[in-house]
Amino acid sequence: MLILATVFISAGGYAINDYFDRKIDRVNKPDAQIVGRLISPRYAMLYHMFFTSAGIILGTLVAYLSGQLFLAVVFFVVSGLLWFYSTTYKRELILGNVIVALLTALVPFIILLFEINLLAGEYGISFRPVSRFLFIWVAGFSFFAFLLNLIREIIKDVNDFKGDQAYGKRTIPVIWGFSAAKHIISALTVLMIILIGLAWWLFVPDMISLAYFLILFILPLIFVLMLVNNHFENKFWHRADIIVKCIMLAGLGYMVVVSVIIKHLT
Image (cartoon, rainbow, N blue to C red; front, side):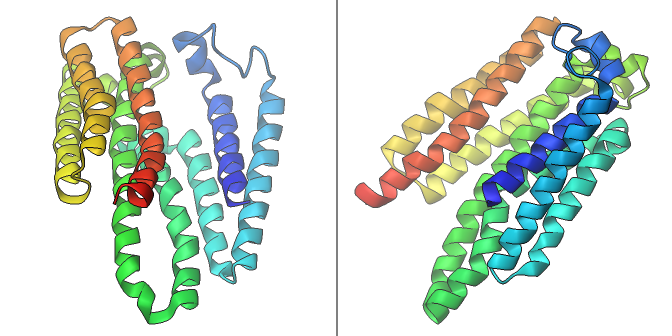
């Protein structure tokens, strides 16, 4: 139910975002536009209301069944942020990018929010050392999700430059220019490469993790650096966007890999 609540609220957020962005999408991606071409704006709003309401109800039910009804506020706050992001925040410089990145980071962290008190109640004082271990792991996944999504958001702003400029969105490429966007993306990407190396050195210094990090994280990030620094054509920025999405998927895959390492190789 927690997974469905997250998926439904995300779906509702996408629907309302496409509803308010249909004019911009007509410029940026006319062939891929859904609302206003395949689905009427009225139905998009209905989809938003249905999925968001279903997500809030499911999330509240999970909070109630876990004996932590106060956590239901998370689903109301996230739904509100997605609405205001689509209507207001995404048009503000940097703010919209940071909000989307934070909401992405919340996805793994919300599991810890629900589980931590239940685990403490089940295991008592013996859970304290484990709680620190769990927090470090989940916070690590959340932080890298935030950083990677922030990189992708700025890359997406470069891809959407024409429509954003035409309709007055205050994105980094529109206000500060392509060069500034390139430098910010490069700085964040280099920071992420360094932090991935530190994470391996401090927390998972095994050869399987090293190979996984090098092949699926660091080398693709280096390729992203090459694309954004050597090309200004839209097709290369689109490729960088696809690579970042693949890195996100690889990040999820590492949850499975590290589980196998902990259970069978340590």
